[in-house]
Length: 369
Image (cartoon, rainbow, N blue to C red; front, side, top):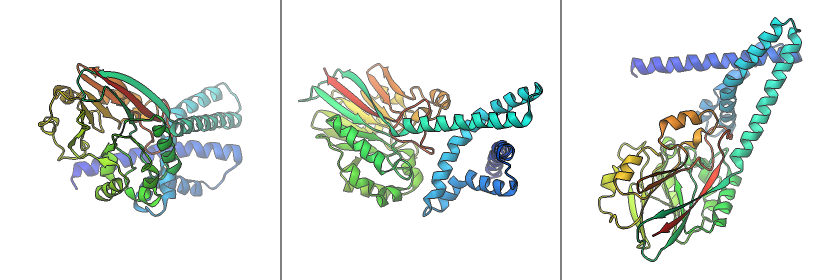
């Protein structure tokens, strides 16, 4: 391992440990003051175990408890970094005004805890209660016998431990209710490892997705992270979902459907090579998990580009980061002939929380003119 990588890793661990200590110190002061908790060493060991649960769960895959606890910890970590400095400042001001220190610690801590509870309840509702967002657009091309096309799109389900089987049933129910002609899933259908997806029989639920023109998907970065793509593809094939791997398919002699490998894949084809043999007089609809190559898609006559990946930051204010990373990190953008739609996703990564974003299914009504 290169020295620079070792130094960066050491820096990250040091910073992470410092943040964990800061959160733990605040928690200990409040618990000790409000409830008389005495054994700081037991508290410290439990905190360390929780803070590294996600990593532990990665190695102890047979014990999902650690991954679940670790996922919620990430949500707590982010908002503790935002809430606690403000709480500390308020407490210092009140102490400076000669108010009783014990009372201040108790009540400021209680307000912080209440804020976390409200935030987590609100975030959980947003995560598990999807909305249907509707877009209507026109593509000025002849699509054979088709004059209209309804697409149901869902991305970033991250099905596994926390985005569970009931959420999958919700997806099937909501998508089928739209009566789509075509169902598209632009990546991150599973959360890394395909084992929970297969073990919990997600496939038997998702095989009920129904559309006359078919159900198609592409790989997202998390399918690569899991390292089980062959097994995943076998399961998708079993349940009738076609995963396009840098492939172009002609749908009903009416339009091209293009599915790209994720940007994670070093061997993925450039758009111009992938579309080399397509006829530009037919509509071209493309799925690309990450909305990172809009200019190339526009240049190569793609009419509709569908992506996910960003989660719209998932937990505010992370959306400020995704807005800087991508030309469009959520919603709709038109560039000349190219219509781009980026979904915030149906599921979630890490904590089952959405603050400032909402789980969603996309309905796209296309008119060919």
